[in-house]
Length: 377
Image (spheres, rainbow, N blue to C red):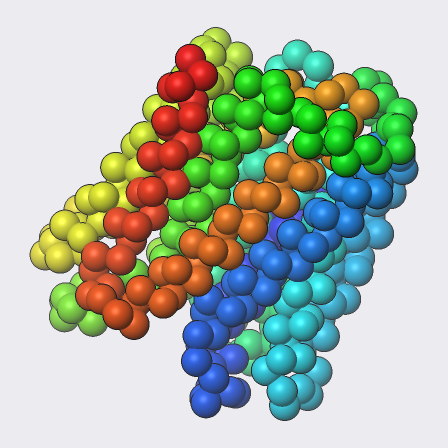
């Protein structure tokens, strides 16, 4: 869990220093959407290669995690070079995302190798660590605001290196690890013939349509609210961290509750609540009471992530035993492809319509996800 937190701090490192990058490249537009999308695109590319080569099932997951954690840290550091081309910065974010494909889904594979029973609980803590790691660069930015933006990058790269070493030296192969087989495209996609696997996967895809776009545009929401409410005075970095990080609590709580209640029902409830938050977002963005606005965002942050470990455990539970790691990686790949479409859609709509209303579009994902889960039930 610690290694997952440390290594995934790289994910939103670029978002935390977004305004510093904008100052360096003032002529570039769509930097928020493009920086986030390049990490996601890199992650997708990595997961495709990992899935097609069945790396997570053939090689030691801990060693794969270590190599990718070190490589991701180095690529993250590269954006501190004297780069005068934004495309080079985007390339390094892509490569960082590529290596994250060997961290997040591989971490879930390692958890699945250690826990037969109680997988939902273990993934709850694991995904909670990822959420906290995703939020952490915003906190680093707040504490280093008097220093150069490079310190955020130095810190996240160092954390990733430490996390990679921890997993190598202290986490051997799990007792339930099953030796992998050669990759079979038909076998991998054949998992979708299982209605339980399919319902969990499509529920996850609907969840992903909303979650990363909410995280990516959260600072923009806070800035928008501060601009339209003169007395709000919100610290964007602090509240971005707190709201995103709150999701780690709901991940852990969701994992614990899955030991007593059906994971699918819990996921359906959480997805329904976060979808409702999407629909209600214009009301609270216009709302004058800053405290109620922040309470709303915290509710959104909590509900938006509570179902993440539940979907992952459901996918792992119903995946083919010898392609469990590959199935998790492939579902992650498709899910993150959905995030790119969502992020770019919101980015385009933000130029065409009132920004107070654009986040209602995110409700489409939870609606599809809930329908998939209920239909199977």
